[in-house]
Amino acid sequence: MAALSEKEAEAYLDARPRYPIDWYKKIAARTLDHKFAWDVGTGNGQAAIGLVEHYENVVATDINEAQLKRAIKHSRINYHHTPITMTEDEMVALVGGENSMDLIVAAQAVHFFDLTTFYNVAKRVLRKEGGLIAVWVYNDIIISPEIDPIMKRLVDSTLSFRTPIMNLAFDGYKTLPFPFETIGMGSEGKPITLDIPHKLSLKGFIGFLRSWQPAMKAKEKGVELINEDLITKFEEAWGDKNQVKDVFYKAHMIVGKFPEVKVESDQVLSQDSNKGLLLETEVGRKHKRRQPSDEGDSGQSKKQNTSEDEA
Image (cartoon, rainbow, N blue to C red; front, side):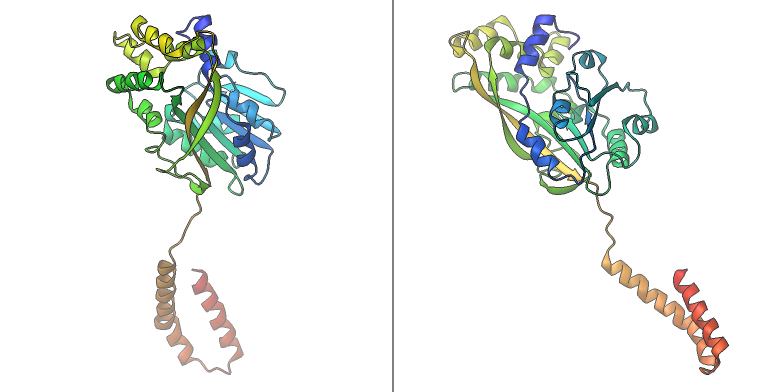
């Protein structure tokens, strides 16, 4: 955002879709409590504003100070700058501590994170009972039969400029590692697909394209993908320049909970069998040498068996 002019930045924000209220409602209905939520990579606070309708307190963090300055203010949202130098312990303490978050959300953001660090922190702060983590991304826009083919050619032209981070988004999080247990709203490798309706002006659309990460990456390498010729084609296909169109962004979501620790039943049975054999060979022989009527020996034997079992 820092590389954009004020007008381009405003156009970019105009082009960004508002996440449907229904998303927050459905996810909130699945968390056990509604005291604390964490919006990671909050940007201008769009998701945080949606969360505060369902959670008493929202912590919203971002690495980009410029974005936080544009964030939407609310008395129950606490915004924090989280520089890359922060340790995991510092992040955990800042957010609210171990086992504190009812919901963690990363909207259009998780593909930018150091996933190992983020998931380590998320597993520490997420409530083990009833807590959820949700990530989503939108990676395509449907405007009209005239505009969509031009947009597809533009998307195809970005292939050589994409980074692995960008490809996670372009793949709709199908290749995103997600070490959490599914609750039926997508899972690792199988995100659910959703539509985000939005009203978009030509000005907002062009501003969005100019701030688009693949286009900016190409520009860094000396290639201007959003050139005047392309803009002219979009303007012609758009029709009335003042027309605001109903468009749809294609979104992909995964929601999960803290993974349960599973113990293989066969392994447990095998261990029990081995323990029984151990008692028979080492302890059982001593039992056979004692008289059953000896109360003291019997009590001592029971105590020893208990000790062995505990060991």
